[in-house]
Image 1 (cartoon, rainbow, N blue to C red):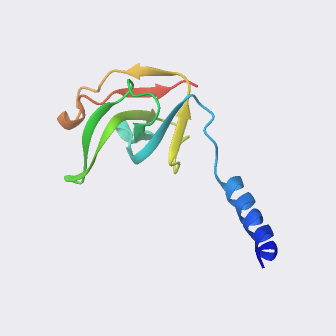
Image 2: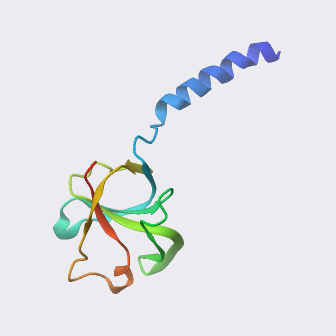
Length: 118
């Protein structure tokens, strides 16, 4: 019985591994949510950095005036071309830090903002 089921499990595992993309960058971040970019251009990805703890800051995020959750290493990634739309993980190697906009929501003033360069 086990010999009959084993090939099925292997086939399903092969299919699933083809559907997930592996992280190709040194820094890995889990997407918490996306928001519309400034001036309706692109999007902002609110992420929790997994393996570079010096990059983000601990934040309690709010959405629609409700607490979304508290995360240890939050960063906002500018995505003007919407390259990361729909992704759950964003991987990258290099980035540049961006200045906070003048009209920033005061709850987000301590969250680092970056744009990925590679």
